[in-house]
Structures are given as C-alpha cells and as structure tokens.
Length: 245
Image 1 (cartoon, one colour):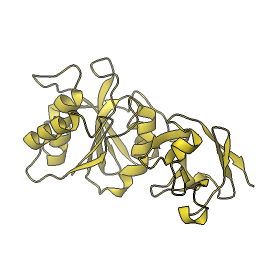
Image 2 (tube, helix red, strand yellow):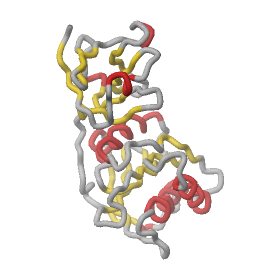
Image 3 (cartoon, helix red, strand yellow):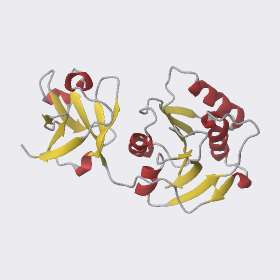
Image 4 (cartoon, one colour):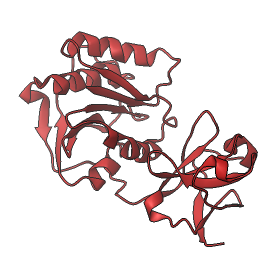
C-alpha cells in the first residue's frame, strides 16, 4: 500500500503524474490511497502534525509518499524513515519529523539514487515516487539508500498551538492533541473564547465550540455553520488554552 499525502491539490496535474509513475514502477496490484492533497501549501510544519495525526490508522508496512516540498531542487535532503513498522518517503524539511519524534522505534536513510531524468521542480514524480514504489515492493536497490543518524530538520514531538488545516466545512483543526487539553478548558482563537462540547448537536445551531475530532486533535467548529468564515480563522492562527469556565 502506498499512501499519498501532499499539497499538490486534487484538481491540478501533479497527482495524476505521480500515480502514473507509481503504476509504472510499483508491483501490480499495489493499492494507492489518496490520504490528503490539500495540506496547507508549502507548510511542512502543519503537514508534519497532520501526518502524525493520520498515519496511525494505516497498517504496518504502509508506505507514505509525503511531499510538501517548497525547497525542491535546492539543498534540502531526501529521506526515507521506517517508524514503528511504517515507511515514510519525502523531503527532509521537517515534514516527517513529528512522526519520528513520537515513534517508539525508527530507522533512517538518505536517498542517494537519482534517476537519469530528474525534473528540478518535480522530485515528487521523478525521485520520491520510484523510491516509494520500491519500498512497497520490497525490492528497493540497496545502493539507492545510505543509512543516516536522523533527520536534518526536526520539529519535535510537542504539540503546536495553531491552526494547521481547515476542511471544506470550515472546521479548523489545530496542532493540539485533545488528550492534552482538559474538557473543562476553553480555547481562545482570534480573540474569541470557545468552550468544549462533545458533539455538534450539543450546542445551538450557529454556535462555535471546540471538540475532539475523529483523529484526536482539538478542532474549532460551528454547529451547521462555517467556523473559518464566521470567526475569521486562517491556517497559522494561534490558539491558546485559557482555563475552565
């Protein structure tokens, strides 16, 4: 199984090109799963927390093609990580680092291999896709990878108190794991105090609140409304825990 996690956008030309390369190089019948192509553009830090929240629902052996790569063609490295039995392929720009920091067991490699034809601006298709395909088939050439001591860019295991993703409903995910925030606490964002509710139906229609979303993150929402529009929220906005009512 190869799981795609990118900021490429579902409506542009890039995802299709990556899938074409995977179909050329991965073993026949390999499942290709679109996890998310709407990671906030260029934001490896937000992406790192989203990836950490989402990867655990996939089986051991899954290969994550994780590419948010504003430094493509530059000096940033190319990394492969095995973390608790799952594999991650992508740029060494912090995107893989939260998964690594929270894992119990990790192994690290740098990608030494380069294809004969390598677009300077599309390493996702030309470099990372063939590596992901090789890992999925268990037949990656040994000289493609060089063992390393770890990643160059590390964000650490700590939560981040800001909005990392807004879905099409306008719900705003934060980088706070809900297990670290007591239900008695309120959340403040853009100057607005938001109390906890278990589910949408526990607050009046049009009311804003925070809750534990389905991937274990603190999320700001409005019952039958758009929290991003109603509250003026954007990716990157700070949130804070301000105590009990």
